[in-house]
Image 1: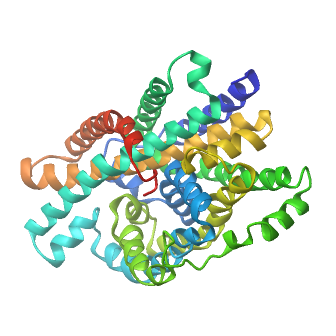
Image 2: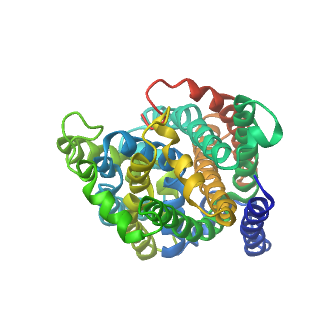
Length: 405
């Protein structure tokens, strides 16, 4: 870690925080509608940026690149197949959601079935997000940032302690956005971080290919397409993580759940200014997902060519970034990663707060609670859930089959 990296990291991070504060300084964050649904004011570009940043974080940058390092290009199916369910969201699901004016997916479940089913779904979402998903986001983010900045070495502490430190820092930062600012603060920060992530994410394979070609981008492309060319096969065999049969059947079903009924994702479109804006936001996201193989999968293939003796496949992405990016850009890219991590973390933290406050608390505990009370309860629940996620996250290091699995 050197002074250039530190300055560029904090410069971009503070820029995002200041712009978010400036845009939010006069906004109402105390009412239920404003805190949980950004006053239903989001436009298509903001929705698309927020959907991308909520979806895209280091568990994918690190995990999916690790899968590509091991298995090749076929793992891109996780990303490109997402375009199909996003079209479903725009044309089928979202019109039904907005027509009913719902705030959460369990609201829709209750209307279709009954109150008991709604409560079961609420609890499933809360447990899955709090215990399974949020800790993975924190751990993968801590792993990437520690590898990028060598925090353990810089501070003279063990790698395990460095991971704990980064998990706490990420959890606290995400908490500040989600618990204090609500969905609108998250969406504003996502737009700026999204621009940075696309720029930074595309820089990694460009510099990686130049490293493969000894300074020549075109020579690097030639090597990628001729040496170990079998790695470029995007049709998954039965032994691959995503066989082609599964990609065209079960994966569409899984992605339809994620993009069309997952509260952490759908909440952005529920906050849209109108049905048309929400639909355009979902369709724009489907187009942007086509960039994901370049940002998420290609770096794993490049890392395979450059470093074939890594102890863990999940080290492919951070090792590549550390090796090929110029020193002055490492800090900027670290700030972009930092933004992507806390975007995913605070996005799902806000959605679980929404589910608990409007679903469990309002329906089962205090049906007479007013709007400000519901926001207060949501903030407290978000704080507790963030603390649980911070405590669980470092133990994911013991996962036997790689982070993404």
